[in-house]
Length: 322
Image (cartoon, rainbow, N blue to C red):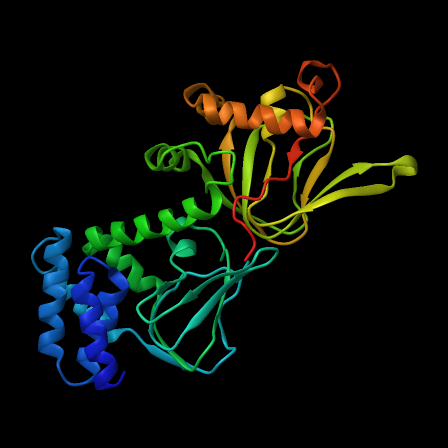
């Protein structure tokens, strides 16, 4: 980073003294321009703002000073959707774009942005692709550094976990989802019950003729919904992608599945089991009304009262394209 960029980074941090990305960028810039002592002072201020133990700021400074920096050109991919990954990055300079298959561009990232925190902090594969729009520099925290955060800097680590949780909540339980009627605290509590998982390509998550066991929200990847047609032929009904939900109608109706759901790429999902789903509907009548209204719209007003098997899939986009 240049001296001018460092000055801008310090100003950004002063406007947001509890923000991890701006703190890291300012500290690294000070270190790289020969002001390591000032960087440590800034780290101590950041630690105090979070209520971290004495010495946390100096420990953070050591991690930031030792972390490798990478310079990349326009178009270079920093993170691949669907790939495994245990690194977290901070954009020091330049600009990056975030995209997801089936959704398109999600965001443009400016210097100070944190990149890739969801995967290492939740144990799932990457849920989006990030690439440099401009010549950029990123600071890379490897898995060993994240382990130090968890063990020696728990307050900082929890702030990162909260950041990842907020991003996933916005993507999976936003206003247009079936959980759009919940307030922020209710969505956070419900999200905490969801089990994140990465499913290999080719895995069948729901089998035709079997009872459903969970409602699943796709964070990344794609899955086919299909039935057996005449002569054993496979008939694909729809392909689901990021933001789509499946399994909840079968849970609501208590019927067996009338279709299969199978991953056609590595699939990252957040699953809410039968008990959690039932509790959510009981606790939040507006959510129940949304589910029932959507079921009636797709299946017909009397479908839930009938005896025929219910389809287990309803396509509901939780994040508007673009």
